[in-house]
Image (cartoon, rainbow, N blue to C red; front, side, top):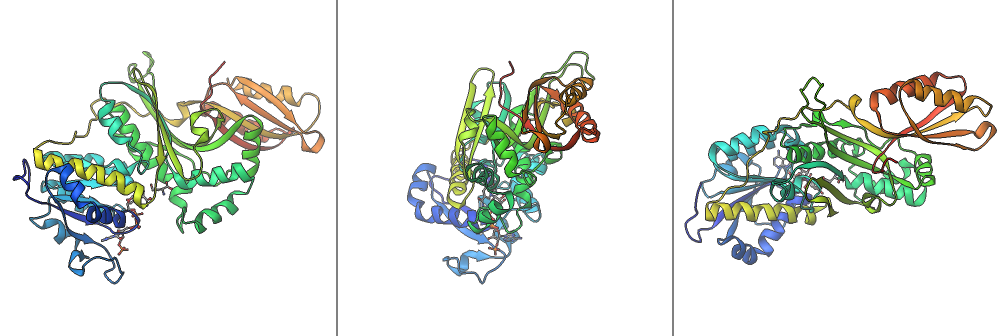
Length: 444
Ligand code: NAP
Ligand code: HSE
């Protein structure tokens, strides 16, 4: 099935999964068959769709549906595979076998790619098939291809994104209405944004998988989900949003992929390192990501020569995700027809991963304190003892309601963690109410 297609011979497509995304992929394949044929040069013909449950009404002829994905992929008249079933197994084996057999694969499966891109890319390489995955990060937004192709002559230094629509919907609603996390999560579930089990979204696993994919592409280094430091949004309170607002900020769940310049004296001999992290952070309201609201996603890429680029749009949903899948499918089909190939995995740089403890960030620390002389000095001294420099400190409230809001200059995570541990034990500090990172600010 490799190499140039006979002129005009139909290219057979197998689709694995017909849920939210698969249903829209199949609809576009059928409704826009003529356009797709013209764009590819040969007809794309749906050979079959693998599902778990044949009893569901899917508006397709029964002969196109099967529960035997393996047999569908093994058919000689299947040239291209769209995997939108999700999960690791059986998707991993099905895709691996299809690629090894020379069938090009388009997948939206970020969880699989975050851990197994190396294995799948090797299978594609062995048979010179294509592996495309634009839909795996930020749904409809073209960001994978720009990183792989458009920026392949540049040097990317940072990728920061809002890559999870569910959590962005929740944080935007908390910011706009002052509502509590649990109330907004319930609304997000009612509206169909959050899954019945929202763990993957709200605890940041979904964003971490996407961050691993983005970092791998940006830094030509294999980064897996285990390399990503992750915190979710389930501990964010209405008060955090209120405090953020008081300092001209909002709170967003950010996926941050950053090149950390190496120091010649370091163990790695001065090699740059890669920091990849997902956590809720304060960002100034004037930052471009602050105005990304609701279930929308956006990704900002900073490169040496291109400067700052921003990609914005719908990061989830059947039709938006299908748009990215179909774009990849057309590319893969053209390659079959004309004999080209997708770029393979590029991991030549092999940059080491920087541990979160070494990662410098600014912090916003909210303390409930006793309102008496010397408390501010003692708190400031604790920061100083741990080498954490304070940028601003404000007292809010008086008496029993006294709070100190401390904003630091850049400090490494480990120093801040040590500072907070000591603050929590101080008699004059009633509670460390919140510790949030501050991103997207210029240091003065
Ligand atoms: P979904 O609605 O849960 O649909 C999954 C489909 O796969 C269902 O049709 C299911 O069959 C089928 N399936 C699952 N396991 C199967 C198995 N072992 N054999 C055969 N069929 C199987 O999922 P989705 O939301 O469309 O997501 C699909 C993929 O796209 C995931 O990797 C997801 O991360 C990714 N993605 C989704 C979105 C989004 O907005 N939903 C956005 C970007 C990326 P039944 O219908 O019979 O149950
Ligand atoms: N669950 C994801 C989100 C969509 O909320 O953005 C799939 O990537």
